[in-house]
Length: 100
Image (cartoon, rainbow, N blue to C red; front, side, top):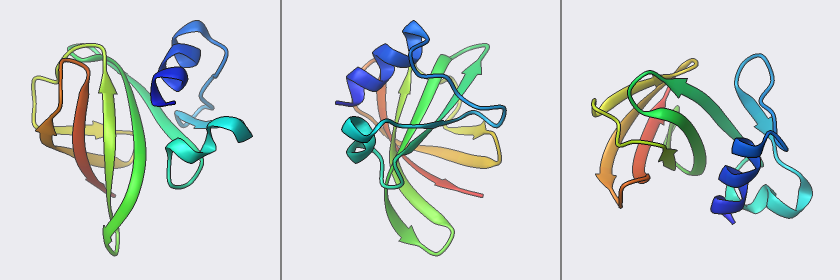
């Protein structure tokens, strides 16, 4: 279902607000712990979409990051969050932790 979110963001069917947040429709809300994803564009990684999955400790979350291209850096800034790549799963997906 995360791939469906990526597809809809790329097609423009799901659009982020001014802060980069997309409130997911009911049928896709289960792909993120809060029913939302954070969307950003990076000059190196291209389109990036953060899916929050579970809290690690206060102020820190685990998640999955989609990116068009593998991020060059292990620490990425998305809006007000610092995202750390913990493990690259394949050419588009990474397991990440994030904190504000």
